[in-house]
Amino acid sequence: MDLQLQEKNILITGGSKGIGKAIAKVLISEGANVSIASRSIEALEKAKVDLGGNVSIFQVDITKEDEREKLIQSFIEQKGTIDVLINNAGGSNGGKTTETAMDLFYEAMELNYFSAVHLSKLAVEHMKKSRAGSIINISSIFGRESGGKVTYNNAKSALISFTKSFADEMISYGIRVNSIAPGSILHETGNWKKRLDENPEEMREFIHNEIPAGRFGTPEEIANVVAFLASGKSNWIVGASINVDGGQSRMNF
Image (tube, rainbow, N blue to C red):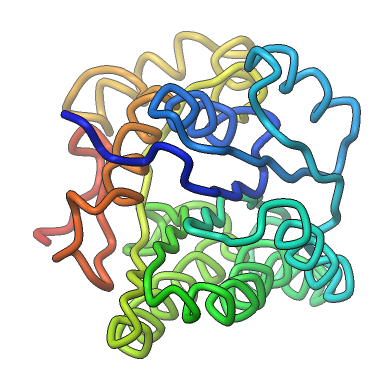
């Protein structure tokens, strides 16, 4: 299937490793003009080499408002337009609610939620000019149901809620907003890889008990769904949160 993403200008946050890097690889294979953003210039430069040099890089700390504004400004100066924004950057911190300092709640919301809201607001001002665009927020099944650390669960739930409200607001401009809720995804720099290395027997039991498909997901399996949502082939999907989890979620919808 030709997704017709050739020459589309696409920005991916958290794009130097893991799911973000896999998304970049798939979109490059579709002929898109891909840019990745991350805090670490070393990780960005390595990703650029790994991706065959066919990617632009932006060093940015997206937890900072002024750097988010500079990112979109620099992107537009270089590319002229933004067709697709993928808010992939995220992470978890803290532990149980009573054991987690309030600062960590604020940090989690800034990284997982406010950064996506702000970048989306900045991006649509340019997308409106062409009356077209796609914004894809990478959330989690633990934004749709209880699970994970409380700070992460809260922030990803907020991101899914924002996705729906912003989608309804933007579709009249031809801009689609959707989110993907991955389950447990295994990649070299992720927490599941660390836990698998530390206690393989415990992880085998986790997979048996929690993932009906019988294995961890791969970053490429998330990336393929992102590519579809980025394309016009999905133009009637608006405000959706799509589980990509091998059946791991316990929700009925």
